[in-house]
Length: 199
Ligand code: HEM
Image (cartoon, rainbow, N blue to C red; front, side, top):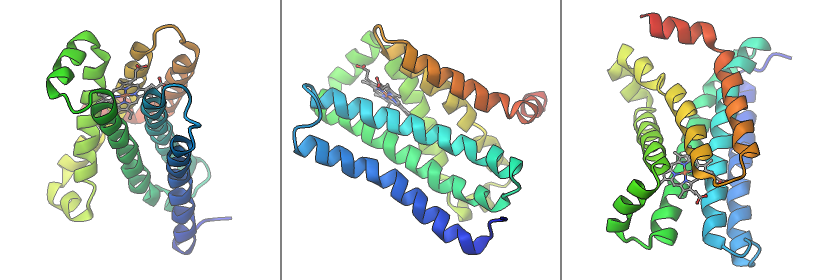
């Protein structure tokens, strides 16, 4: 079956549902004391993993649309990209408010002590630039520069697993799985990436 613009509404409604349900779950888990012994760490990890999962799902959209000739799916990428940004914003907000308790001077010392935070910051700044330029009116105004800027989603896809594996103390299986998945998704675009770098 070929999806059309008529189905797009349902696909997008499903995506909103799938992205929002985990946030409701997190709020309920915290409110009912189900967020483990260290709820602050739980929230930071949960939202970080949420951002990374959404990013990987977003990167799956184009290959799936191409493979199954469902071009209409490409129109859902902006929606998913904005959810990546939303999860990353919750992750950063949880870190600044619940972990650092808004002690801004600590942000600097923590960044020096834990350099993976700098990597996360870089990824977040790129996501921020992608989110604010995602409006159609800005896209039109930016012309060819828009695509160049939006190609930095691949840099985000490299930075976030690095941020993840650098942040863990011992457990490396989970971040390694994420690195393998990211590598697979970038490999699926190897021709496009080769063209980008040869320009
Ligand atoms: C402003 C930048 C960021 C800061 C300050 C930040 C901070 C942190 C902190 C404190 C941790 C927990 C490390 C630990 O104690 O175990 C963490 C883990 C993580 N972050 Fe970030 N982060 C940032 C950006 C991002 C972005 C943009 C993403 C994804 C799009 C992301 C995804 C993750 C993931 C997947 C983890 C590992 C979660 C886990 O241990 O289960 N972070 N980050």
